[in-house]
Length: 266
Length: 260
Ligand SMILES: Nc1ncnc2c1ncn2[C@@H]1O[C@H](COP(=O)(O)OP(=O)(O)O)[C@@H](O)[C@H]1O
Ligand SMILES: [Mg+2]
Image 1 (cartoon, helix red, strand yellow):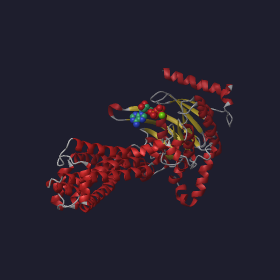
Image 2 (cartoon, helix red, strand yellow; image 1 turned 120 degrees about the horizontal axis):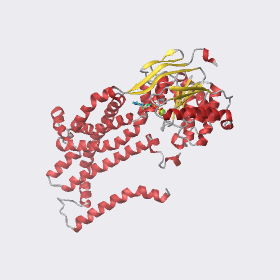
Image 3 (cartoon, chains in turn purple, brown; image 1 turned 45 degrees about the vertical axis):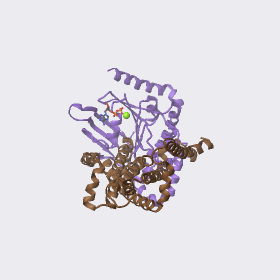
Image 4 (tube, chains in turn red, blue; image 1 turned 90 degrees about the vertical axis):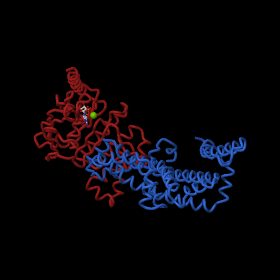
């Protein structure tokens, strides 16, 4: 699509080395990834191949050992602001109610932070609406530890997008959930993305999940992680669970799967 | 938990305490234990009713020095704990010194305080402070260090400043640790002030006990002990109640869920 235009996220020859001296670990090597604005990208690969490292590189939480990362045209040299993030363990703050957890980014990210005092009622309404859209209407006053794992993860997703970030980073956010809940959340995630059209990077080890959600799937090799396949998924949206059993979908999953099996054996 | 079970939970400590005093009383009478070795509870109560005013005055003095020392310890422990927990530079710089400092027996410091400040209230406050400050500091620092790295990442990629990471995640996370340490610290503070009063003071329960023992008034010595213990339990209970109130979430899963 908008490939010709300047990419929103641009990794150029990025490598990262952990540790020093004899204990150096080359985690990822010469990554070249271009992500267009509003694109949904999935990254799959064996565990320990550097997927989480990639997330930290893109968001500037880790400086690259070689190469450069650009986001929105600017070279990333420190943590970029206003990014949405969600991890496998939902790490909601247990001392805050679910609603207050979801509101957290509004207390930190501008311009919301500035407006929060004046617009509090409006923001609360917005958080409640967002919670309702993921099926958590009326649960705002509960504490996270009073919610099930799936509900916590939904609240976590709400927190990661309440401030309408330009960039959303999802590190195996559905990994710890049962299959049914997971598939439910795929649909919710897709709907949120269709509504807001943020740029999203999803790390996962579930190939169906990657193909269901992403425009582009990147397959990474064993450590040191390199991109060994870039697969465009041209299935129409909104995608449905039924589609995941249709030949076109299954074919793509199989192709990715073969690639990964090859990588693991090599 | 049903109602009678709950009542039992509340009653139990009182029952056990009363039972202990009963056994003590009976044993003293049965074996004819001399009063100057172990006075029976009835004798201790006798001593209390004989000198209510001095006991009250000295108890208030001890309470005063203890609480002042304790409050100072909270302030200093909180500040230093936050600094040590939030900055690896401060941690590396300060920790060895703090450990060295904490290995000094605090009683040994009382004579030093006396040289500096004379005998009386100030050494008692300082001893209470010094002895209760360290557990608070360590716990606050530990609480800060237990912020999940993912939580830090989320906050940092939202653009949170160091101060915001501290106020949004660090301080709430360390509150349960702080309150847990307060319960330990308050009892230690009593130890500190009473020790100091015993060595170098003209009033306070420690001083009262010392003078009583020099007159072989053993029931009065034990009356002092009982008063200190009672004050210790009372302040501990206050700290514990405060803890439950302030950090409800850390007790998740207990009876709180039904409480809403
Ligand atoms: N802070 C760190 N220090 C040293 N090695 C690390 C660190 N973080 C990750 N690694 C190593 O880098 C590799 C990639 O880690 P990670 O990006 O977490 O992989 P993934 O998310 O794909 O499972 C792993 O081998 C891991 O052991
Ligand atoms: Mg990972």
